[in-house]
Length: 192
View 1 (cartoon, rainbow, N blue to C red):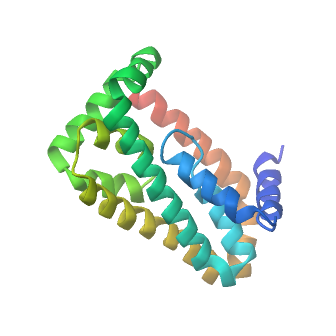
View 2: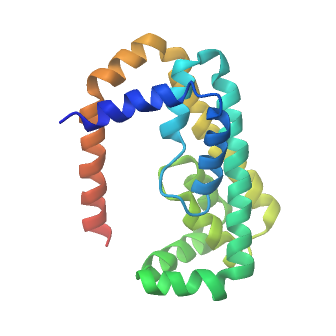
């Protein structure tokens, strides 16, 4: 069953859509607040299929993601007790919120940078930063640097990897996809 290859081919096709940039911005913005799918899944095929626009796509992704991060911060700041906390309790995520709070206490603004660059769910830290009333300007700067580094790195890999990268991805997409699923399940079982 070639699920990930089919998804990869669809992403390459969608990357050529006339509204692809708007979809990329919407995905990037929503991922920073609540959506579980990272924008890399759309950014990579777009940069691969249109390498001359790779930097533009990375910039759109970064800007929309930081704006989404600011909106997530506002959710945490203004609506934590009325909206977010009941969801955290209902979904049983109190321990995850406690971990995020402890990381903020220990690492401060660096945790926002790390969450912005790494595959750690950025949305958890945008909302937590607002709830903990972190200074907004350092939050925005750390978000912009972390997210920008990540998305420009993805765009660079696709732009300069070109056809060779496309062949490698196409060849190993099923292994990468299923490996990611297995890793996610293992991490879930370890950290639940």
